[in-house]
View 1 (cartoon, rainbow, N blue to C red):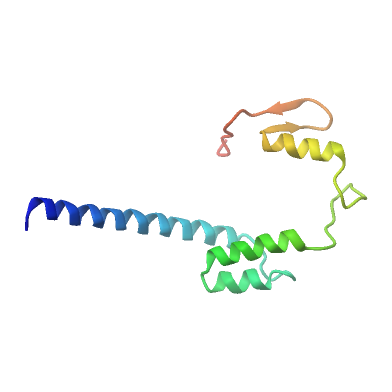
View 2: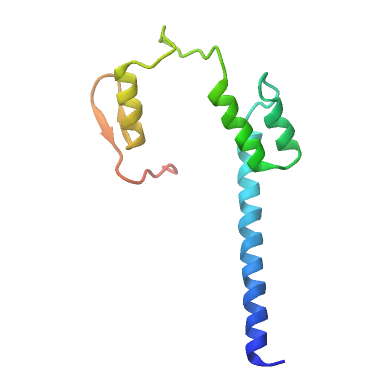
Length: 117
């Protein structure tokens, strides 16, 4: 077998190895997330079924659908089921890593937050 063929085979095997490694890590991450949830709660039946089948993408889609369509969400300290302008501002700011504590001060943690503090 020529060196060229050997290198070609080795590069294919390396690619497969990297793919399998990242797929295994992704599955482990999905599993960790779903194990942290109480999948016995009403409305999460589809999520639980897909999780138990190991169909992570389908379970994720079902979980997203659950959050989009659930009813009767209780938000402590809020009478209305819609967010106020202040709540929307604070939520938008949080997406930019800017957090409000009470009314002031405002804390901005920069572009990347080190969650391992």
